[in-house]
Image: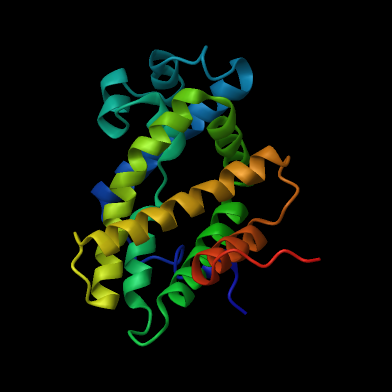
Length: 209
């Protein structure tokens, strides 16, 4: 049985030294940010404090993350998700491919850094600046995902249909985090993912009487 730590999302080929250094720096910056936020709150945490804790310069922080909100929202998974989606069988239904890859991503993230995931999601709900930045970045993620959709369906990547579909998908996936935090993290994330993709695939369920 494949574990989260040995999944295709985490069992990567050996990276070059330069890429490993970049990942190490990004990870150190994120770890410093989360630690400071736990100690003193989001608003009180400054880029200068983050840089000092991560043992880098403020300019290095900005080189990797344009805003403080980006430190909270950005992770290493987006490019890997697209890569893994492209590896799925060409005749596999699109949402089945997405469900498979997203389940791997969630399992890997929760196995590696569950407390950081909960803190990030909490900030998404509680801090307006983080929520606003997420909404800004959704269009960028949507365009990335539209590439994969276009390859699988034959639609033009910039077609209205591809854009509407992918932005609906991105919005639905974002709501998983919001719902999870608003309900005190009681739900299973994989179950929330399945429910979300079921709605996207089949529409709203019929109300039980």
